[in-house]
Length: 199
Image 1 (cartoon, rainbow, N blue to C red):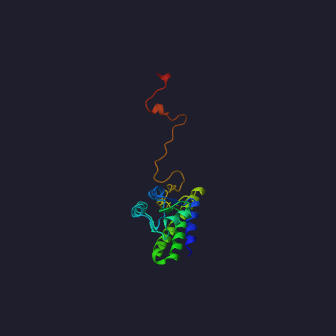
Image 2: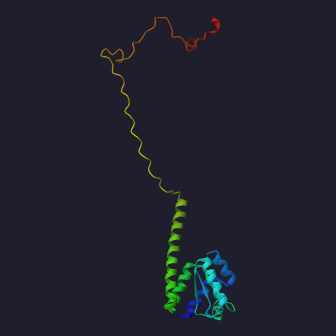
Image 3: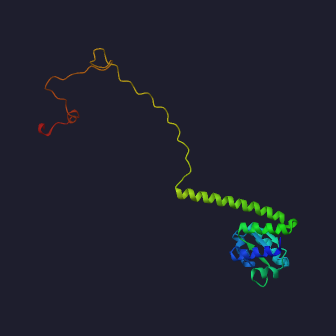
């Protein structure tokens, strides 16, 4: 793989806003856990290399030393010199590491494999998030467990059997009829209340 293609991919990442250049921007994206891979120039100072390692630990991301000098990286990115940069897009980071692995498999193949795993997980998370948002838009909810079966109701009591003559049920108390012309006392009378006129 031509070295120029790798540098052009870095320039494309910068134009797309997916590349942070310089120590302060790289530290910011790393601490925000937005960096996917940190890139260090081949002739970067030892202090810069230590800071790059520290940023990678803080952002839980990979870091690599590129086969390009600070001047080469600077020309590709429109700067005088670039010692450190960070790719913030997982797809671009995976593509960059594949190109580096083709250039030098011994040094970059392992990092390319690790980035492939991260890219696959990120794609799965995006798909799950998209499905979740679609369900929310359509008003779908997680299915609830079916309700427990209700206990069987006891059989209804059968009405008492009628006597053969059809007058009253068996076992029922005999009906006491009132003499003709008498009315049943009202509730007030039953409680001991007497009408006002009778007082």
